[in-house]
Amino acid sequence: MEKLSIIKIGGKIIEDETSLHAFLKLFSNLEGKKILVHGGGKRATYIASKLGVESKMIAGRRITDKETLDVITMVYGGLVNKNIVAKLQALQINAIGLTGADINSVKSERRPVKEVDFGFVGDVKQVNSNGIDKLMKADFTPVFCAITHDGNGQLLNTNADTIASTIAVGMSEIYETSIYYCFELNGVLRDFNVKDSVVKVINSKTYKELLDAKIITDGMIPKIDNCFDALNNGVSRVHIGNTSMFTKENEFYTTITL
Image 1: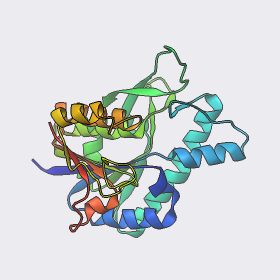
Image 2: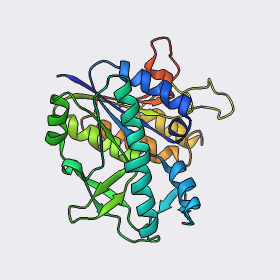
Image 3: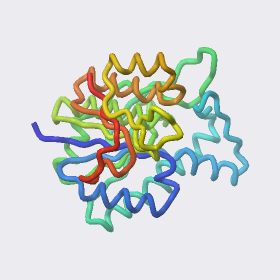
């Protein structure tokens, strides 16, 4: 089975031009088939404030009303996505920028209202793996932003980690798929103040121990749950760390296994 790497990058890498350029250079040198997934929340918040649109967050998740969705579509699907695509073209990677609506690649349904009405937020239901594969077979490198659609003409703001893991699950029917979650830390840390205190391997047993010891808390919990969900549904490997995961000399990152 041919290998496929799916890389998700977050806030600080996107915000800083130097970090972004350094990452995209590493990404362009990665061998084999690859897909990039990005967010852009900090940039969206900044531009929303410039436009007089208030950003509302609950437990780190954005409430997406109509005005906010307009800003997110402009920022994720336009500004951030096309900037990344242009930089990849300069590195000789024939990238194509996508939302989930393009080629019907990622379909979601609007999140039902329980305690909180998140507005135009989508939970992924379906990935068009054959459509995405056609792009890759034509030697295009897909670059997905954190927007999906419901099939009825409505765009939806969708968590980029979830998009990365569900695309990986969909593509694992065709490829041996690995996910790399890239952020500013070296990996999952035993002590947040010690940057080299990386937990190198987490399996379902050690995950429970890390939860009980309160080493893994808050926003890291849904991220790791996502990882296990992907592994249970056909993904081969999941790694969490900073961009130096893609350099041969780096051994500081976290691998999640069953």
